[in-house]
Image (cartoon, rainbow, N blue to C red; front, side):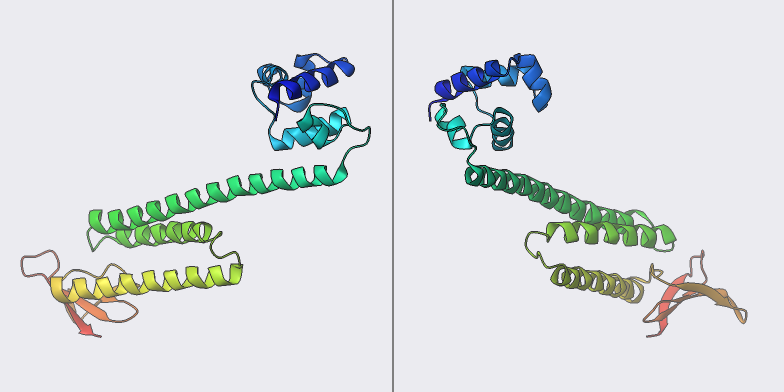
Length: 228
């Protein structure tokens, strides 16, 4: 491929239209320097611009690439091929960006979950709130990251749902272990109350067990599971 020849042909075509480099650049939405580099053979237009130039000058893609006019009619088949190549390249870039964004969201979601569980004390509701928020971010990232591996939305939805169930189970298992072995208040309780007959006790109800916090705020404070 002779870039100098192609550049000279592009320059000749522009002059046939009585256009300046500035006018052509404005029409194509590129810089004047880009047009100049094309016509000197220093650089070549990308595929999508090659199609646009062929249509504008009413020549074929083959003529542009060869750097000389072969016929007056545009080669429709070559044009369609170039358009498909441009579309494919665009989709590849879009897919790559989606994959990177998905991975970033997954990492950010994991960071939020770990930070929430590490920073906030077990009796604070903010730990569970931020953990749920981090899980949502993680699941969104997973949905985006799996887009190229699992193009079928149904299969992808099942994988994301499975991950959601895994997170749900992980939260409650770690909650159970923390209460049973480390005597911490359960983070993911849906109801906190007390028995008027036992005013020095707080009752924490979760989906799978009930825990009692005795003598809260004192040196004798204990937390134990009373109903698995």
